[in-house]
View 1: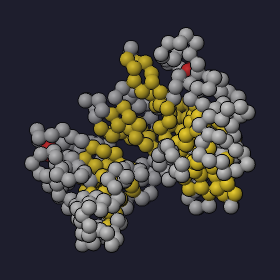
View 2: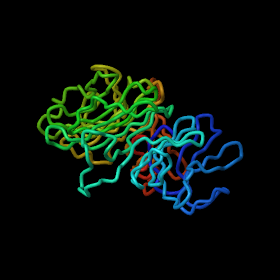
View 3: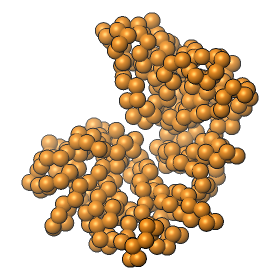
View 4: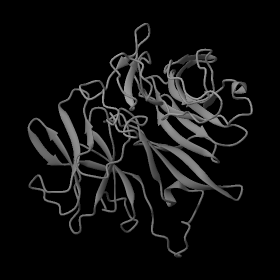
Length: 354
């Protein structure tokens, strides 16, 4: 699935271009004349399968596929193989972008000369391990993270990496987690779990906006606010998420329900009618989970155990689509849906972005 940064830990995962003509996938057996005894990433295009990772002479290291651009022409991989001349760390674990047979070093993990646990020059991102976070839809920008030292404290700093620059993102270093990026690459989303500014944030340019700006008074003292990120529209203006805060009058419980944020103080209850436990924070069923949004943000996918359609004959987790002005659309229907022991899909297989 090109749009989501789901790392590949086994053979057969990868991405397909939007026009359906190009496929990228991992495999652990040789499928071409360029034989590799280790894992390899392949492209299938116009009836030809070819390897994408050009290992140098000598040992061929394992490779992990992290992301695929929407046109499936650019990939991001992690490997200890030295794929570029500027990779000078002595087989450190590195991230590379590969396109058109050319590899581009995104980050490097240099050998530490003094053998101390921490890398040298903590304020220099080029001198320490960088982790992959996300790839823009066009493949031009990779989002990375690394440990940093701020005011004698260790935290995580986020960067945007292009072919010409490595730019530090103005996201709070402490108590932050990277969530995703909009398809048009205009907005970066993060989670702050700092007690005083907890919530989802959108970074657009240098402007940061708190998105979970709803009133939590409806929870009373019965439980703490909880929210889970799901997806965003193409331009990042609409966000799909779940929360146990009853934002809408139609939300009559303290269980996790799925909403869209359409703008300041403008929220829509997506999983209407799921009805969990009212008296406490325990939902009494598996939580409603946000899965995905259409590009314009008008159609939402979510999972729930509640039966929101006459065709839903069981109490298992099902996938639903919510379209404005239309009844709930049960996606996972079929002849086995009346069997309560059938879990379709298996809970956990349809997390956000999967």
